[in-house]
Image 1 (cartoon, helix red, strand yellow):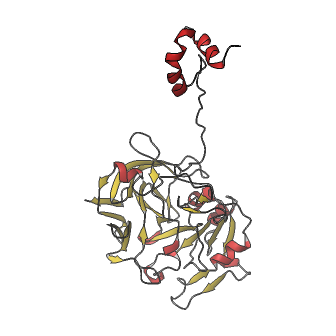
Image 2 (cartoon, rainbow, N blue to C red):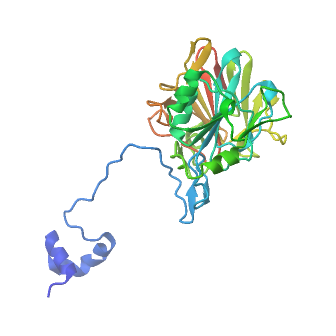
Image 3 (cartoon, rainbow, N blue to C red):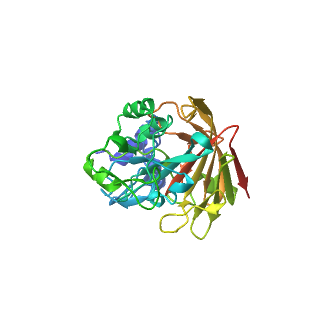
Length: 351
C-alpha cells in the first residue's frame, strides 16, 4: 500500500528514493501540489477596525475602545449643542465619543455632539438644527435631539429617518430648563432617558478605522511632531489644542482660555481632525458643504499627518486617507472634528 507521503512525492514528480532526505522539508512546507492558494477580493462597505477584540470583549463603534461584550448595544445619540459664551460650560460635553464643530451665523460655532459608548443623564444646552446637520448625523442612525429650527431644516432632518426629540414640540418630559444659565442657553435633554426609551434601536456602524493602540495610529506612526493646533472659524471664534503627554490627549482652549467641563476639568481629545470645508450661505444661514472633499489634518499622539477627506453620500461616513490613498487609523478614544471654512477660516500647526 502506497503511503500518503509517497503518493505526494509521486504527484510532485520526484523520485521516491529521495523520500528520506526530503520528508523534513515536506513536514515544514506541506504538500500542496500545483493547486493555487485561494485569493479574496476586498469588498466596499463601512470601515472596520484593525483592533481585534478578545472573545469576551467588543469594540465600541465610535471610539474604537475595547469594552465587555454586550455593553455597547445602544443607539447613537446626536445632539445639537450650544457653544455661545453664555452657554459654557456645556453639560456632558466631556463624555462625548465624537464632536463636530461647525460655523453658524454671527461667526460663532455650534456642535453636533455624539454619545454612544456611554450616555450621560443630562446633556446641553440644546439648540436648533442647521442645514449641514442632516449630512453630519445621517450616517450614525439612531437618535437626534435639537430645540427646533427652520422648517426646511427640520424636514431635512426628519427625512434621514432618525428618531427625533424636539424641544419646541416635546410633551414627554425629555427637556427642562437649567437655572445655571439664562434662556435661550439653558435647554437640557434627559439624554439617558431618551436612549432608554429607544433601547431596541440598533447601534451605529463603525465610521472610521482604528488602530489597536495610540502608538499604532496613522498620525503617531507617520506624522510630524506638532504641539499646538490652532483653528480659526471666524475673526471671533478661535480654538486651540495643545498636546499633553501627561494625559495622552490634546487639551482644548477657546478664545484664549481653557475650555472647561462643568466639573472644571479642561476638555480633551485623543484625536483632533481638521477638515477644510467650503461654506455657502442661503438666506443668511451658513451651510458647511459636506457632500464633497478637501484637505484635512489628523493629529494623534503629538504628531500630525496631512490627509484628504471625502464624503459622497449623505448616509456615507467621512472617509479619511493619507497621501498614498491609505485609510487613516485613529487612536482608540474620543475625536473632535473641526470643520474649518476655506477662505475665512484658518488652521495653523505649531511644532
